[in-house]
Image 1 (cartoon, rainbow, N blue to C red):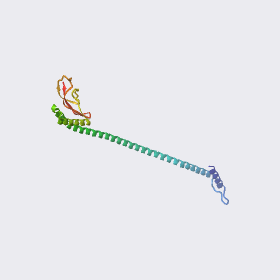
Image 2: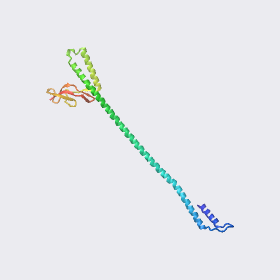
Image 3: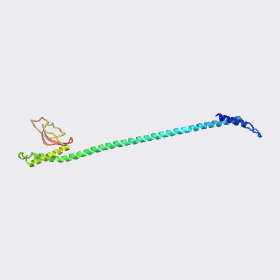
Length: 214
């Protein structure tokens, strides 16, 4: 600033002194000084504006980047939420499919067991009809061994006979087809089993046909 003022004073002095051989000019020193001051103010104002413009530009760029970053974050959150939902739906689908497969398997197994049980009934009737003197015969022993093998395999599959005689009547397991009088059992107790019932994995395949004490 001091250099500028000195430069202005020198120019004002030079302009005020007439050059040799020439007439004095009409230049007004005071007007010249005012012009210099106005130019200095304009230069300072332009300098201040040039410093403010980069700062404003940087502020707006940062604000724009923040908005873009927030938009990206929101999009990522939406995608993560969608993936989590799809994974949950797939897990539910897998569990539902496994449950349906298990139910279908049990339904098919029950159907096969129901068809095998009449064969078991015929084995038991045939063995019960063997005379006492022929129970030790090779034929009777062979049939008895086949029957035991069949029952063992059914037991390994989870097929169990339902207890009936001497137990309290339970409509979930027993099917009462008649009532009888009994001195051995109290009222409501199963006194006789007419057809054996079976369960498969804790579900009834066939109810026991029983006679209940009245």
